Length: 113
Ligand SMILES: [Zn+2]
Image (cartoon, rainbow, N blue to C red; front, side, top):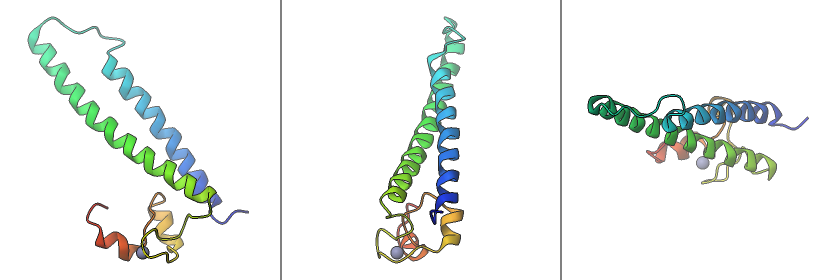
């Protein structure tokens, strides 16, 4: 069995989950069930709601992207190697943060993670 098969399955499951959520968010934004209310106060609320959904959608999309990248790295046998220092990332870290492409040391240097 492939070394990272378990993690790969976990990533695919997470990906399906996120895609499903993204679908629901898009549906909400399009107001398929509720046509926009002409009442201005209601509309303002709806707009606010859309902004929240938009932000949420952005977060889901960026996580999806990270998962896709991780799946590609698994295919290319790049997975589990730190993209900065090229050291092997400990399996414990990969299990905790499956979409990571950095070891703890390099991730610490990058405030973004
Ligand atoms: Zn590193």
